[in-house]
Length: 258
Image 1: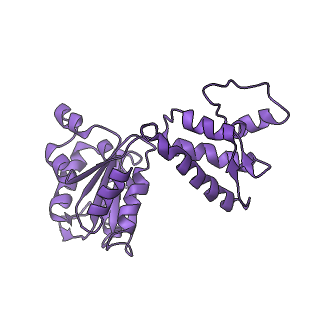
Image 2: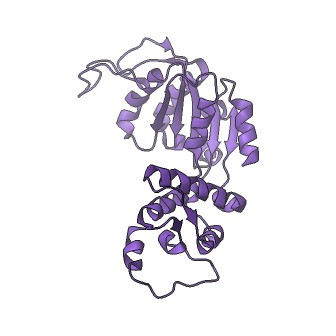
Image 3: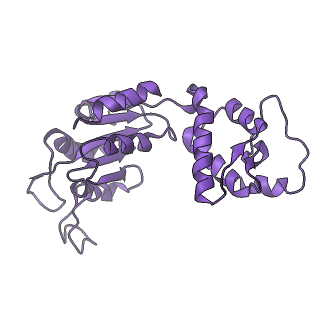
C-alpha cells in the first residue's frame, strides 16, 4: 500500500490520465477520489460513471449528453457526465464493460478533450480529467478484440494496481479498527474495540471480497454489539484454529443480522 500511496502522490498534481486496476472491493473508487481531492481540481466536481451499470443504448448519452429530441424519450437537453465534471475529474468505473462503439467516441475525448452530444455534430472542448478503473485484464481484452488498443494505451498513461487485502495482512487490523471507529461514531456508540478472538479471526480470514467485505462485516457487527466490544461472533468469523461453539442466547439473531 505504501507503493500505491507513493504512486498516487506522484500523479495527483498532474492532469495525467490514470488507470486503476484491481479486483472488486479493493478500494479503487476510494483511491480515485483521493487523487482528485489531492489535486488542483479538488474544488471542482468529482463524477463517477459506472460503465457496467448503464445499458448499452444509454451509455453514450450518459457520457456525452444529448440534444432534445435526439432519440425517443429525450424530451430535454442533457449535458452528460463528462461536461458535468468540467474542471474536475470523472471516474470511468469498470471501463472494460464499455461497448466498442462507444470506445471510439471516448478515444477522441481522451486524446483531444473534445465531445459531441448525441444528436449534434458540433464538437466542443471540455476540461475534464479522466481516471479509469477496471477489475478486468484490458490487455487480454485488446488481444481478443473486445477492447480498442489505441484507447487502452491512451488510458494507460499512469497505471496503479491496487493489491488485494489478503496480499497485505498487516493492513487488516488497521483498516478494521478504522471502520470500527467510523461506524461506532456514526451510530453513536462511543469508543469500541475488538476482542482478542475477533482480531485473530480478522487476521486469519482470506478476504475474497477485499476491503468492501471488511466494511460489510464491521458495519453490522457494530450495530448488533450491545457492549463496547465487538467479538468474532458479531463478525461471523472464527480464527482458523477454532470452530464455532454451541450458540449462546442471542447468537442466532446476531448471525442472521451479519
